[in-house]
Image (cartoon, rainbow, N blue to C red; front, side, top):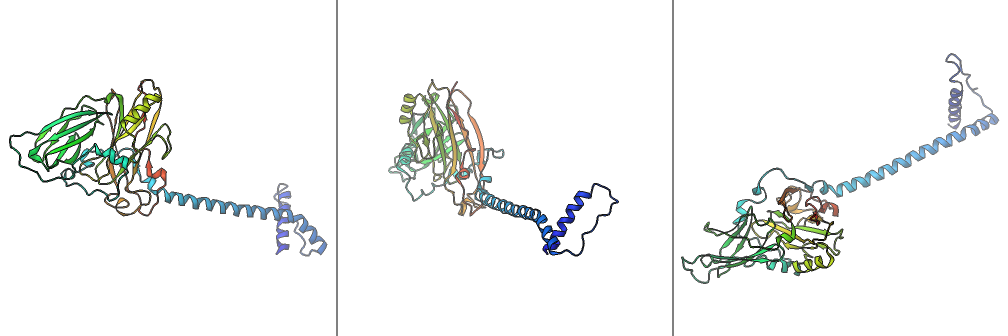
Length: 387
């Protein structure tokens, strides 16, 4: 076998050397008989070429093995981030607010709150947003001529507290309509409700209270400090929890300047820090967990400083109910796998900017990496300079 290889190599060498002379020339064939001395000489001449060929073959096999390993790892990564490809589209198909929430959700009984307790900071945030969530029985009949009374109080950070006193509607659920969005809350047994509304659409959106019998009472929006802040809101309708994450000045996840439901800050602290540093700071001014009828809304409010000339606040959206390990109703063909949402951006003395998006279904059994879970394309970043 080795002799045959030697002969083949020498034949190739001879052909290369003589091939350009003439096509008619006959190449002399090697003798069929080779003595040991001549064989050793031929082996010595051929060995470097054979070894070079073997080296190239070995290197080729190594490259193929490396390429296969790289492809395998790429496939694993692709499977791991399958949900990333199915996570969000910047804009949803055209439509109206009924695509986000169906009218029947607005009059449904409140959903049962989750068993797990929310962090204390989030409980404090919600305390001012809604009270008397569960309808109660009236404590006494009302006088039919007694009208409902509504008053408002401006609240720090572009918000407003709405106080309702309607004894003839005690124990009923009422709708706070901040058109086109709605909140459903319940009057207590005395017909009272206190609700803190975040004015994330500014002063121009129609505001009213709608009672069970269809009576609608308009509400005047109070003068507030809304011209000193910018707001970013995300709105959805399905009974799931979306978390807005805000990263002020390139903050890291969990670090200082990372504002979200578990670390919401507050109006006073963020305003004080803005004045001290002369750079805008913000707080989560309204938070929902998907457990009440009506629209679910989270709002980030940031204070502006007149001397600030640059600065960006980055944002991301997390489908917290779905999490990173995908199973159950929030993946595949599950009823909570696809979440339409809207965003509203409000800046001082500028028109409201509205966008629509959708968190698309991710494949069940996938495990989302952070880049896929925290969707940074869902919400626009906020420019803190007003110049």
